[in-house]
Length: 384
Image: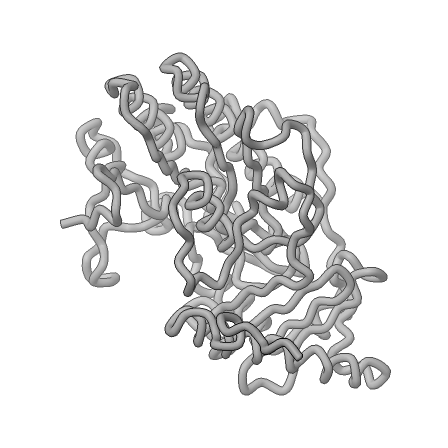
C-alpha cells in the first residue's frame, strides 16, 4: 500500500531507471508508470536491458539514449499527461494543492527524437577539468567517481578524460530532456488557466538538485559544488508575487515549505528551521547571509560519513566528518570553484574560523527541530 503523505490522491512514479527485480532491494514495487508500460506491452529500459542489448554501446553512451518507444510512454510525458488527465476530469470548484514531480532530467538522459533533434546544432559550453583540480579534491570525491564508473548507476557508465564532443553530446541530451518538461509545464498551466485556477493561484517551479554534467570531473549529484546545489526557483502569482523580479540573494530549498504555509494562511510551526520567502519576493527583504546543505553517507557517496556545506556570498566551506581534508573556495575570486584552498597555509586561519559555523548550525538545527525555538529567542531581555 502506498502512503498518501497527506494528499487525498497520489500517483507515484519513481526513478526512471529503477529495475523491478525484487532481489535487488526490498523496496521495489510497480509504480503507475510500470503499470502503464505493462498494459501497453512495453518493456521498460533499464541498465540491465540496455547492457544486455549492446554492452559496448552501453559503456560509450554516458547515459545518453534516445527514447524510441511510444512517445507518450516516456516518463516525463507520462507524468505530465497524467496530471493533465487528472485536471481535466476535476470540477474546478474547490481549492487545489497540486504537486507534480517529473522524473527528468534525471539520468538516463533519454529525450524523444524530436526534442533531441532541436539541439543538433546547438553549442553548449563544456568544462575543461584539469588534473590539478581533480588532485585537490577530497578523497571521498575520488571514491564517488570510482563508484559512478564501477556500478553503472542509472544506466550511466561514467568515464574519465572525456572529450569536448562527448560532453557536448551529454549536455544536448540533458537540455532536450529539460525542454520536454518545459513543454508539459506549459500544457499544465494552460489547463489550469482554462479552468480558472490561475485567477487566484501561486505556482512554484523548482528542483531538488542539479547535475554536474562533467563539471569538476563529476556526473549527477552527491557533491557540494554550485553546479549541483544551485537550482531554479521560480514563484508566479499575479497579485501576490511581483512580476519580473529577480532575487540574487541566497535562500535554501527548505524555505519553500514555510512559503507555501504563509500563502495558505497556515501558521508556520515554531520548530521549523526555515523562513518564508514571501518577504524576499514581495517586500525586498534580504535573503540569507549564509546557506547550508548536508549529505549523509550512502552506497554511492560512500567515502564520508557526513558532509556539511556552508556558503555565503564570498566563501564556501565543505566539512567532511572525521576526514582530514575538505573544501574551501573564495567565490569572489573563484566563482567556478576550481581552486581548493583547504590545504593552503595562507588560508588556514580563515578555514578554522569558518569551520566552527557548520558544526554550530547542525547542533542548533537539531535542537530547534526537536524542541522548538530556544529560550533566548522566546524570553525578552530585561530593560535597565
